[in-house]
Image (cartoon, rainbow, N blue to C red; front, top):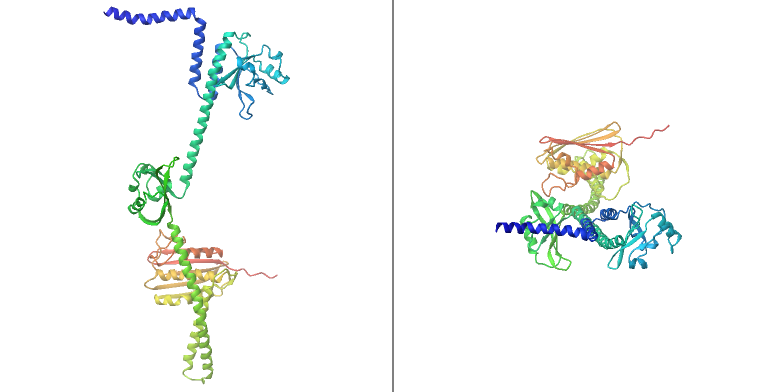
Length: 551
């Protein structure tokens, strides 16, 4: 039994080997033909890229048929209906090509190959075509057809020995041309798909770049509330990285109150929104506008939700500041009206008291009282006029300004709040001072902000020092207080809009920012020095007006 099994195993390979040898001896040509087709099939199926596939086809044909002049002609994409040389081997490319003889509707192509025994002596063609055939020096033009459509033409010359191809060789080339047509069509389809894939990838990257560049948080969730996308702005708002958020439940990533509001709108089919949702998240206050819209597929089937998060915290502060500005404007108009009304009785009091003073005899003890009334009446009138000047709006024409006078007028406006806060004012005004070019009203606003900030820095009282001097063509003003001072980490931010260290409701953070803008508008400089617990000193400097030199 062992001998029989061994014989059975040995007999089959032995018989196949004998059969292969006999087939090779009796059917050698047919086997070579079949082997060539198999190798061509392998060559064409191993490569789908256009140019490498053409190179492999030409190398295989050249080695099989011993042909050293080859060319493949294809339709010109720039000029539809015209042919062009897509690939060549051993062919001298002519300067001017007339390939009109390769018209796919040519009758010879319907029956097989187009043959020119001598390109130089070709008949029935134009002179330009004859010149092209002579320069190409190709004898056979075999159409590569698929589904009755010619996708290319394969051109061949004589063999390396100078012989024409045999009928079997031509038949083999015509069969190979069908394979080449299929391969070329597949390569073109692959190239088209590759270009579309690249375009889709480019559009995908472009769309992602747009989403990433938005200053709005964008996320999408499926119907179960699982996060599918999470852009960079969402990372900044909620401090959760994209790789940590995708695939997780949305409610586990957002603050509880916000997640609850979003969940309450989960079943709505229309676009909904959450307006000014205030949050405390990771130690910072946020105000968000959230837009929630259903996410639908191309078939209009709902597949999830798209959420947009707009951080309006800064915008809300600006709105509050605009509202506060409107209130201050209205208050200024009201103060102006009150000042006008107060001026009338003050004028009457002043006139009558002066008339009364003239009627009193000299040496009357009541004269001193009347003088005090007159003086205080003028002082009240001056304060009202300063209030009127400060309440005026609109751009004022630039003029030469006496800084000492502006300082005095501003101090008169804040005399009462400084007195009630137990703040002693020390003035050291240098005289005479050169004039400064600009707007007295705007400079008064600068000094008013500095004086009021000093008062707020000394809630238990203290001393406010105001000094003016002229130095090196500039007018210098120093405002120093003995208040609480400014912390070292805050001192570089005091001129930023909306930055304030005062308690809520005590300041908007715009006073020093506006003052800084006014000083820069007047080509000036401002510097601050502060020691926490000891006080703060602001040093302001403006260029003095230069006097004209008369020759």
